[in-house]
Length: 335
Image (cartoon, rainbow, N blue to C red; front, side, top):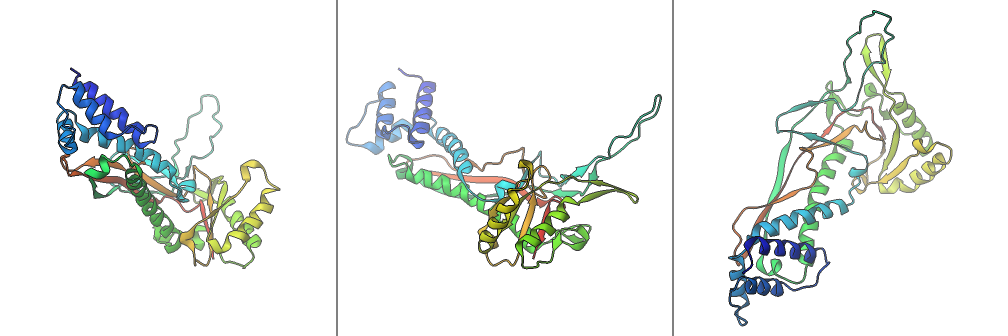
């Protein structure tokens, strides 16, 4: 007679291969094989009773949820929100407000003479406070969906979960750009005091030149008499769809004349539709907008919230995260 561990392993492998489209074997074959290996009689006329008998043999709830979480990683990787290209990711260890200096410089080292003393320095830059919140919902997965040989429903559910979080994070990130909230020293992210605001000339090439000059010129104050260059590298030109062709033309010409390190990338973002302007964002690690997650868990997770039964399973999905402006020097707004 087969052990419970062996049945668990078989079910785990079956689900993984089934939902990834590797195997076309039916659920009926999994159930019947498990019953036979366990010495349980199969009722050929009562599929529902066979499933119940099989559920008494294995912890199908755990196997099913583990499989969904593994598949959700793939679905999350396949989503296409543009914020992923230019936003930084940071890990927090708990839900307490945490001070973060994401963009900072340490003063250039001083010459130390023989028997000289070392001078203490600090990391200089803006301080942002990040605090994780939990986002999630419940969802019912019916028995017919769980034990169906048509895997499209499960894939649709997982794709929908991944997309929901991806869209929500994107909404929060791009609202920071368009709404321009107070962020540092009681000053909006984009402000003349931050040297990251360009009044448009309605000529994309001229405006890009102005934006590049501002970003390349960003500094951090060390003291009243000393500044350090941040050495930010402009990278992404983020535009609404209606400015996509203008951006592509100008950036295409610009990229013909610069080094590979200095190449610009055009990002067309539908959330900016109707926004009278566009943005220049820097390359990592100096990105000025950051996503914070609990212990680096970037992918939503699925948990059980009720006992598995013949009617199906209720699960909850959640992600702990925060979105913050962590600096202003890596962004320029043109409008």
